[in-house]
Amino acid sequence: MQISQNKIDKESAQALVRAFLSIKRAKGLKETTLEHYRVGLDFFEDWRSKPYEELNQLDLVEYVTMLREERKLNPTSIEFRIYPVKAYLRWVLSGGIEGGKIKGPLPDCIAYLEIQRRKKTKPDILVTPELMQQFLGECKTLEQKVYFALIWDTGARRSEILNLKIKNVLRDESGLCVEMTGKTGWRKNYLHESISLLLPYINTMSANPEDWLFNTTYVSTRNSADGKRSTATVDGWMKRIRARLVKRGILDRSDKFRIHSFRHTKARNLKKLKWSHDEINVWMGWTKGSNMVTHYGQARAEDVANRFLVDTGRAKEKDDNASLICPVCESVNGSIAKFCCDCGNALKPEFAATRERERSIEAQAELHQARQLIKTIKSSTFLSEQLGLAVN
Image 1 (cartoon, helix red, strand yellow):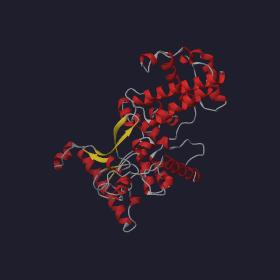
Image 2: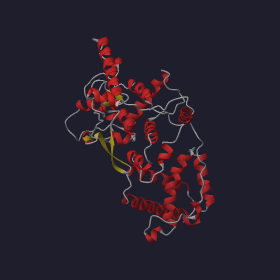
Image 3: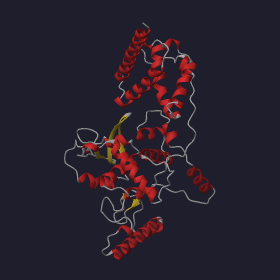
Protein backbone atom coordinates (compact mmCIF):
# COMPACT_ATOMS: atom_id res chain seq x y z
CA MET A 1 0.00 0.00 0.00
CA GLN A 2 2.90 2.32 0.81
CA ILE A 3 4.44 1.72 -2.62
CA SER A 4 1.13 2.50 -4.28
CA GLN A 5 0.76 5.71 -2.27
CA ASN A 6 4.29 6.80 -3.24
CA LYS A 7 3.45 6.17 -6.87
CA ILE A 8 0.32 8.31 -6.54
CA ASP A 9 2.33 11.12 -4.90
CA LYS A 10 4.93 11.04 -7.66
CA GLU A 11 2.28 11.09 -10.37
CA SER A 12 0.56 14.00 -8.65
CA ALA A 13 3.85 15.91 -8.43
CA GLN A 14 4.59 15.25 -12.09
CA ALA A 15 1.16 16.60 -13.00
CA LEU A 16 1.84 19.73 -10.94
CA VAL A 17 5.20 20.24 -12.63
CA ARG A 18 3.59 19.89 -16.08
CA ALA A 19 0.90 22.40 -15.12
CA PHE A 20 3.52 24.85 -13.85
CA LEU A 21 5.56 24.55 -17.06
CA SER A 22 2.39 25.01 -19.12
CA ILE A 23 1.74 28.30 -17.34
CA LYS A 24 5.32 29.39 -18.00
CA ARG A 25 4.98 28.41 -21.67
CA ALA A 26 1.77 30.43 -21.93
CA LYS A 27 3.69 33.45 -20.60
CA GLY A 28 5.94 33.24 -23.66
CA LEU A 29 9.06 31.56 -22.26
CA LYS A 30 11.27 30.03 -24.92
CA GLU A 31 11.91 26.30 -25.10
CA THR A 32 15.51 26.72 -23.94
CA THR A 33 14.32 28.52 -20.79
CA LEU A 34 11.57 25.95 -20.22
CA GLU A 35 14.19 23.22 -20.48
CA HIS A 36 16.19 25.01 -17.78
CA TYR A 37 13.09 24.97 -15.54
CA ARG A 38 12.39 21.33 -16.37
CA VAL A 39 15.92 20.17 -15.51
CA GLY A 40 15.93 22.12 -12.24
CA LEU A 41 12.58 20.68 -11.16
CA ASP A 42 13.58 17.15 -12.18
CA PHE A 43 16.64 17.43 -9.92
CA PHE A 44 14.46 18.62 -7.08
CA GLU A 45 11.72 16.01 -7.50
CA ASP A 46 14.26 13.17 -7.64
CA TRP A 47 15.60 14.35 -4.30
CA ARG A 48 12.35 15.28 -2.51
CA SER A 49 10.97 12.65 -0.12
CA LYS A 50 8.55 14.81 1.93
CA PRO A 51 5.22 16.38 0.96
CA TYR A 52 5.60 20.01 -0.09
CA GLU A 53 3.78 21.24 3.03
CA GLU A 54 6.29 19.52 5.37
CA LEU A 55 9.44 20.97 3.79
CA ASN A 56 11.44 23.32 6.00
CA GLN A 57 14.58 25.39 5.59
CA LEU A 58 16.86 22.62 6.85
CA ASP A 59 15.53 20.36 4.09
CA LEU A 60 16.40 22.91 1.42
CA VAL A 61 19.83 23.46 3.00
CA GLU A 62 20.37 19.72 2.71
CA TYR A 63 19.32 19.89 -0.96
CA VAL A 64 21.85 22.65 -1.66
CA THR A 65 24.55 20.65 0.14
CA MET A 66 23.74 17.66 -2.05
CA LEU A 67 24.09 19.76 -5.21
CA ARG A 68 27.44 21.09 -4.06
CA GLU A 69 29.04 17.95 -2.59
CA GLU A 70 27.50 15.09 -4.55
CA ARG A 71 26.72 16.75 -7.87
CA LYS A 72 29.88 18.89 -7.65
CA LEU A 73 28.08 22.00 -8.92
CA ASN A 74 29.65 25.43 -8.53
CA PRO A 75 27.72 28.29 -6.82
CA THR A 76 26.45 29.72 -10.13
CA SER A 77 25.12 26.33 -11.27
CA ILE A 78 23.46 25.81 -7.86
CA GLU A 79 21.67 29.13 -8.25
CA PHE A 80 20.47 28.02 -11.69
CA ARG A 81 19.05 24.84 -10.15
CA ILE A 82 17.43 26.65 -7.19
CA TYR A 83 15.77 29.45 -9.18
CA PRO A 84 13.05 27.27 -10.80
CA VAL A 85 12.50 25.48 -7.47
CA LYS A 86 11.80 28.82 -5.78
CA ALA A 87 9.27 29.79 -8.42
CA TYR A 88 7.62 26.36 -8.31
CA LEU A 89 7.32 26.17 -4.50
CA ARG A 90 5.96 29.71 -4.41
CA TRP A 91 3.25 28.65 -6.85
CA VAL A 92 2.46 25.41 -4.99
CA LEU A 93 2.61 26.67 -1.39
CA SER A 94 1.54 30.33 -1.59
CA GLY A 95 -1.93 29.93 -3.02
CA GLY A 96 -0.93 30.28 -6.65
CA ILE A 97 -2.80 27.16 -7.71
CA GLU A 98 -6.12 28.33 -6.30
CA GLY A 99 -5.67 31.99 -7.22
CA GLY A 100 -4.13 31.34 -10.61
CA LYS A 101 -1.17 33.60 -9.79
CA ILE A 102 2.37 32.63 -10.69
CA LYS A 103 3.84 35.26 -8.33
CA GLY A 104 3.48 35.70 -4.59
CA PRO A 105 5.46 35.53 -1.34
CA LEU A 106 8.17 32.90 -1.12
CA PRO A 107 7.41 30.11 1.36
CA ASP A 108 9.55 30.10 4.53
CA CYS A 109 11.32 26.87 3.58
CA ILE A 110 13.17 28.60 0.75
CA ALA A 111 12.71 32.34 1.31
CA TYR A 112 15.90 32.84 3.31
CA LEU A 113 18.08 30.23 1.64
CA GLU A 114 21.61 31.54 1.10
CA ILE A 115 24.14 30.19 -1.37
CA GLN A 116 27.83 30.93 -1.04
CA ARG A 117 28.97 33.19 -3.83
CA ARG A 118 31.64 32.04 -6.27
CA LYS A 119 35.07 33.37 -5.31
CA LYS A 120 36.58 36.01 -7.54
CA THR A 121 38.31 34.41 -10.51
CA LYS A 122 40.38 35.65 -13.40
CA PRO A 123 38.09 37.71 -15.69
CA ASP A 124 37.50 37.03 -19.37
CA ILE A 125 40.36 38.29 -21.49
CA LEU A 126 39.89 41.67 -23.17
CA VAL A 127 39.80 41.26 -26.97
CA THR A 128 41.80 44.23 -28.25
CA PRO A 129 42.15 45.09 -31.97
CA GLU A 130 45.70 43.70 -31.86
CA LEU A 131 44.51 40.37 -30.43
CA MET A 132 41.59 40.32 -32.88
CA GLN A 133 43.96 40.63 -35.83
CA GLN A 134 45.98 37.68 -34.49
CA PHE A 135 42.73 35.76 -33.93
CA LEU A 136 41.43 36.37 -37.46
CA GLY A 137 44.81 35.26 -38.82
CA GLU A 138 44.19 31.83 -37.29
CA CYS A 139 40.72 31.45 -38.85
CA LYS A 140 40.83 28.90 -41.67
CA THR A 141 37.90 30.21 -43.75
CA LEU A 142 36.24 33.53 -44.57
CA GLU A 143 33.09 32.24 -42.89
CA GLN A 144 34.95 31.87 -39.59
CA LYS A 145 36.44 35.35 -39.92
CA VAL A 146 33.02 36.90 -40.57
CA TYR A 147 31.34 35.06 -37.71
CA PHE A 148 33.88 36.15 -35.10
CA ALA A 149 34.16 39.66 -36.55
CA LEU A 150 30.39 40.05 -36.12
CA ILE A 151 30.57 38.67 -32.58
CA TRP A 152 33.33 41.17 -31.73
CA ASP A 153 31.64 44.09 -33.51
CA THR A 154 28.19 43.62 -31.98
CA GLY A 155 28.83 41.78 -28.70
CA ALA A 156 25.86 39.56 -29.57
CA ARG A 157 25.26 36.11 -28.13
CA ARG A 158 26.68 33.26 -30.23
CA SER A 159 23.20 31.92 -31.12
CA GLU A 160 21.96 35.38 -32.14
CA ILE A 161 24.62 35.60 -34.85
CA LEU A 162 23.95 32.01 -35.97
CA ASN A 163 20.25 32.87 -36.29
CA LEU A 164 20.93 35.65 -38.81
CA LYS A 165 19.63 35.28 -42.34
CA ILE A 166 20.87 37.21 -45.36
CA LYS A 167 17.78 39.44 -45.15
CA ASN A 168 18.77 40.46 -41.61
CA VAL A 169 21.81 42.34 -42.96
CA LEU A 170 20.59 45.69 -44.25
CA ARG A 171 21.39 49.37 -44.52
CA ASP A 172 19.40 52.31 -43.21
CA GLU A 173 20.05 56.03 -42.96
CA SER A 174 22.61 55.44 -40.18
CA GLY A 175 24.65 52.73 -41.89
CA LEU A 176 25.01 48.97 -42.30
CA CYS A 177 23.35 46.95 -39.55
CA VAL A 178 22.01 43.55 -38.52
CA GLU A 179 18.56 42.86 -37.10
CA MET A 180 18.52 40.21 -34.38
CA THR A 181 15.89 38.54 -32.23
CA GLY A 182 17.31 37.56 -28.84
CA LYS A 183 16.12 36.90 -25.30
CA THR A 184 14.49 40.31 -25.02
CA GLY A 185 13.11 40.36 -28.55
CA TRP A 186 14.06 42.40 -31.62
CA ARG A 187 16.99 44.79 -31.72
CA LYS A 188 19.29 46.41 -34.24
CA ASN A 189 23.09 46.57 -34.01
CA TYR A 190 25.08 48.82 -36.34
CA LEU A 191 28.28 47.50 -37.89
CA HIS A 192 31.69 49.12 -38.13
CA GLU A 193 34.57 46.74 -37.48
CA SER A 194 33.16 43.77 -39.41
CA ILE A 195 32.10 45.55 -42.63
CA SER A 196 35.35 44.91 -44.52
CA LEU A 197 34.91 41.14 -44.05
CA LEU A 198 31.11 40.87 -44.19
CA LEU A 199 30.52 42.54 -47.58
CA PRO A 200 32.77 40.26 -49.69
CA TYR A 201 31.38 37.26 -47.78
CA ILE A 202 27.76 38.14 -48.61
CA ASN A 203 28.72 38.70 -52.24
CA THR A 204 29.68 35.01 -52.47
CA MET A 205 26.28 33.84 -51.20
CA SER A 206 23.03 33.06 -52.96
CA ALA A 207 20.42 35.68 -53.85
CA ASN A 208 17.83 34.05 -51.57
CA PRO A 209 17.27 36.42 -48.60
CA GLU A 210 15.89 33.52 -46.53
CA ASP A 211 19.19 31.62 -46.53
CA TRP A 212 21.10 31.44 -43.26
CA LEU A 213 24.10 33.73 -43.11
CA PHE A 214 26.10 30.81 -41.70
CA ASN A 215 25.06 27.52 -43.26
CA THR A 216 26.47 24.17 -44.27
CA THR A 217 25.53 21.11 -46.28
CA TYR A 218 27.29 18.75 -43.86
CA VAL A 219 24.84 17.02 -41.51
CA SER A 220 27.40 16.67 -38.69
CA THR A 221 27.95 20.43 -38.41
CA ARG A 222 24.49 21.84 -38.92
CA ASN A 223 21.82 22.68 -36.39
CA SER A 224 18.69 21.80 -38.33
CA ALA A 225 17.42 20.27 -41.54
CA ASP A 226 17.61 23.64 -43.31
CA GLY A 227 21.40 23.81 -42.94
CA LYS A 228 22.04 26.37 -40.20
CA ARG A 229 25.41 26.07 -38.47
CA SER A 230 25.27 24.55 -34.98
CA THR A 231 26.61 26.11 -31.78
CA ALA A 232 28.82 23.04 -31.36
CA THR A 233 30.53 23.91 -34.65
CA VAL A 234 31.46 27.47 -33.66
CA ASP A 235 32.53 26.21 -30.22
CA GLY A 236 34.91 23.87 -32.04
CA TRP A 237 36.24 26.74 -34.14
CA MET A 238 36.89 28.75 -30.97
CA LYS A 239 38.61 25.88 -29.18
CA ARG A 240 41.01 25.19 -32.05
CA ILE A 241 41.83 28.86 -32.69
CA ARG A 242 42.50 29.44 -28.99
CA ALA A 243 44.82 26.41 -28.90
CA ARG A 244 46.83 27.77 -31.84
CA LEU A 245 47.14 31.20 -30.18
CA VAL A 246 48.39 29.54 -26.98
CA LYS A 247 50.90 27.49 -28.96
CA ARG A 248 52.22 30.67 -30.60
CA GLY A 249 52.53 32.41 -27.25
CA ILE A 250 49.89 35.05 -28.07
CA LEU A 251 47.77 33.79 -25.17
CA ASP A 252 48.67 32.23 -21.85
CA ARG A 253 47.19 28.82 -21.14
CA SER A 254 45.44 30.24 -18.06
CA ASP A 255 43.75 33.08 -19.98
CA LYS A 256 39.94 32.88 -19.88
CA PHE A 257 39.12 33.23 -23.57
CA ARG A 258 35.83 31.92 -24.98
CA ILE A 259 33.15 33.13 -27.41
CA HIS A 260 31.41 34.92 -24.53
CA SER A 261 34.60 36.94 -23.95
CA PHE A 262 33.72 39.02 -27.03
CA ARG A 263 30.43 40.01 -25.35
CA HIS A 264 32.23 41.01 -22.15
CA THR A 265 34.68 43.09 -24.22
CA LYS A 266 31.90 44.93 -26.09
CA ALA A 267 30.05 45.83 -22.89
CA ARG A 268 33.26 47.08 -21.30
CA ASN A 269 34.14 49.18 -24.37
CA LEU A 270 30.66 50.76 -24.54
CA LYS A 271 30.85 51.63 -20.86
CA LYS A 272 34.32 53.12 -21.34
CA LEU A 273 32.91 55.26 -24.17
CA LYS A 274 30.48 56.74 -21.62
CA TRP A 275 27.33 55.09 -22.99
CA SER A 276 24.44 55.24 -20.52
CA HIS A 277 23.16 52.05 -18.90
CA ASP A 278 19.91 52.35 -20.88
CA GLU A 279 21.79 52.61 -24.17
CA ILE A 280 24.01 49.64 -23.33
CA ASN A 281 20.96 47.56 -22.30
CA VAL A 282 19.33 48.25 -25.68
CA TRP A 283 22.50 47.44 -27.65
CA MET A 284 23.33 44.25 -25.71
CA GLY A 285 19.76 42.94 -25.65
CA TRP A 286 19.18 43.21 -21.91
CA THR A 287 15.87 44.09 -20.29
CA LYS A 288 15.02 47.66 -19.34
CA GLY A 289 16.54 48.48 -15.97
CA SER A 290 18.89 45.48 -16.08
CA ASN A 291 22.09 45.75 -14.02
CA MET A 292 24.01 43.30 -16.21
CA VAL A 293 26.25 46.13 -17.38
CA THR A 294 27.75 46.30 -13.87
CA HIS A 295 28.84 42.67 -14.28
CA TYR A 296 29.85 42.56 -17.95
CA GLY A 297 31.35 46.03 -18.10
CA GLN A 298 33.07 46.08 -14.75
CA ALA A 299 36.51 47.66 -14.46
CA ARG A 300 39.56 45.43 -14.76
CA ALA A 301 42.98 45.54 -13.14
CA GLU A 302 44.47 46.94 -16.37
CA ASP A 303 41.76 49.65 -16.47
CA VAL A 304 42.70 50.77 -12.96
CA ALA A 305 46.41 50.77 -13.81
CA ASN A 306 45.78 52.78 -16.98
CA ARG A 307 43.57 55.28 -15.12
CA PHE A 308 46.33 55.77 -12.54
CA LEU A 309 48.94 56.43 -15.25
CA VAL A 310 46.68 58.88 -17.11
CA ASP A 311 45.66 60.77 -13.96
CA THR A 312 49.28 61.12 -12.85
CA GLY A 313 50.40 62.37 -16.27
CA ARG A 314 52.51 59.32 -17.07
CA ALA A 315 50.43 58.19 -20.03
CA LYS A 316 47.82 59.48 -22.46
CA GLU A 317 44.29 58.16 -22.74
CA LYS A 318 44.29 55.37 -25.32
CA ASP A 319 41.39 54.63 -27.64
CA ASP A 320 41.10 50.82 -27.65
CA ASN A 321 39.12 50.79 -30.90
CA ALA A 322 40.68 53.67 -32.85
CA SER A 323 39.22 53.81 -36.35
CA LEU A 324 41.39 54.05 -39.46
CA ILE A 325 40.93 57.03 -41.78
CA CYS A 326 41.49 56.40 -45.47
CA PRO A 327 44.32 58.72 -46.68
CA VAL A 328 42.65 59.02 -50.12
CA CYS A 329 38.87 59.41 -49.58
CA GLU A 330 38.93 60.10 -45.81
CA SER A 331 36.30 57.43 -45.14
CA VAL A 332 36.18 56.01 -41.62
CA ASN A 333 37.06 52.30 -41.42
CA GLY A 334 37.27 49.78 -38.59
CA SER A 335 40.46 49.26 -36.61
CA ILE A 336 41.08 45.80 -38.11
CA ALA A 337 40.40 46.76 -41.75
CA LYS A 338 43.30 46.60 -44.21
CA PHE A 339 41.68 48.31 -47.20
CA CYS A 340 39.12 51.10 -47.41
CA CYS A 341 35.53 49.84 -47.74
CA ASP A 342 34.68 52.78 -50.05
CA CYS A 343 37.62 53.25 -52.44
CA GLY A 344 39.66 50.09 -51.83
CA ASN A 345 42.87 51.96 -51.01
CA ALA A 346 45.34 50.44 -48.56
CA LEU A 347 44.74 51.96 -45.12
CA LYS A 348 48.37 51.50 -44.06
CA PRO A 349 51.54 51.44 -46.19
CA GLU A 350 52.30 47.83 -45.18
CA PHE A 351 49.01 46.73 -46.76
CA ALA A 352 49.85 48.21 -50.17
CA ALA A 353 50.38 45.86 -53.13
CA THR A 354 53.91 44.63 -53.83
CA ARG A 355 53.91 46.16 -57.31
CA GLU A 356 55.02 49.77 -57.13
CA ARG A 357 55.03 49.38 -53.34
CA GLU A 358 57.55 52.13 -52.68
CA ARG A 359 55.62 54.53 -54.89
CA SER A 360 52.41 53.70 -53.07
CA ILE A 361 54.02 54.23 -49.67
CA GLU A 362 55.50 57.54 -50.77
CA ALA A 363 52.18 58.73 -52.25
CA GLN A 364 50.27 57.86 -49.10
CA ALA A 365 52.85 59.61 -46.94
CA GLU A 366 52.61 62.74 -49.09
CA LEU A 367 48.82 62.67 -48.95
CA HIS A 368 48.91 62.34 -45.20
CA GLN A 369 51.34 65.25 -44.85
CA ALA A 370 49.22 67.41 -47.19
CA ARG A 371 46.05 66.77 -45.21
CA GLN A 372 47.79 67.55 -41.94
CA LEU A 373 49.07 70.81 -43.43
CA ILE A 374 45.57 71.77 -44.61
CA LYS A 375 44.17 71.08 -41.17
CA THR A 376 46.84 73.29 -39.61
CA ILE A 377 46.05 76.12 -42.04
CA LYS A 378 42.31 75.79 -41.42
CA SER A 379 42.90 76.09 -37.70
CA SER A 380 44.08 79.69 -38.37
CA THR A 381 41.19 81.99 -39.29
CA PHE A 382 43.57 84.56 -40.87
CA LEU A 383 45.32 82.03 -43.14
CA SER A 384 42.02 80.40 -44.13
CA GLU A 385 40.58 83.73 -45.19
CA GLN A 386 43.72 84.73 -47.11
CA LEU A 387 43.86 81.41 -48.98
CA GLY A 388 40.11 81.16 -49.49
CA LEU A 389 39.77 77.89 -47.60
CA ALA A 390 36.41 77.07 -46.05
CA VAL A 391 36.54 76.56 -42.31
CA ASN A 392 34.63 73.45 -41.12
